[in-house]
Length: 312
Image (cartoon, rainbow, N blue to C red; front, top):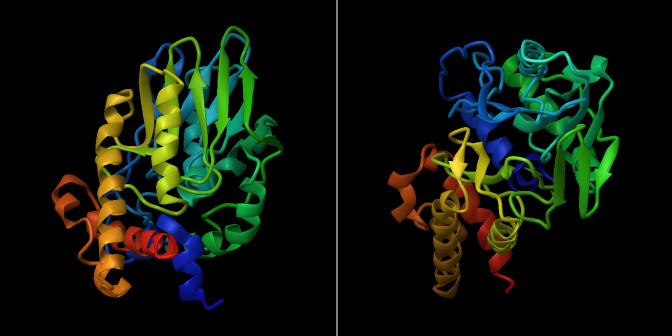
């Protein structure tokens, strides 16, 4: 399939952000700073930018959960340098072994820092479909990210060594983390993690706050998985992008509204035979003032939604 078609179908938000990055300058990030969001849970807030040479793709919320015996990383960062910075920040907090590195989904800003943790000898944990997604897209993402950051700066592709097919747990000693492998939503390999002790949901990119959501999976499925996450019963959440801690499920109201508007107006455009190229710039415009980076991502979201819904 042609490269531009591959980007539209497989690349999702990440390829949009990678290509957009070449059009926009970004401020250099500060060294990774982990802040506590609940007892034993530390998160680095990602920059509300696209990948650039200045930010090393440190654009996602990443961090760790510390137990009595071990540490679990929730997303290792967006590049080798970002992962190294995260690992050093964790080591400033604890000397406990990093037993698990959880990769919430396939997008570069959440997985390319994984190689920085090899010397810790952790299990790399992912959704059961993550290996296939990385096999299909990883080399392409790596090439695009290297083009932006510089040759070799993306880092190598790390495959998960421990897979979650439905639900699983990670034991850190005195605390247990519940993992859920979700059906297609933001992507086709979304994995969330809930800390039982603090009732904290680490949602990955199933939850965006302030930064516009990006659709690379299934629109109707994403709405369904928001319901599934609410049913888990956490009291607060860490979104993949946005503030490091938000109330749950109240913080899902904005993303639910946006996805519902996207669904409703795309269906209306299809019913009126509006061409997909026109729909990309007319659907969901009422949401434009509510989200950062809206113009970079909404057209792609409309195209993906249109391709899914025209065959209903």
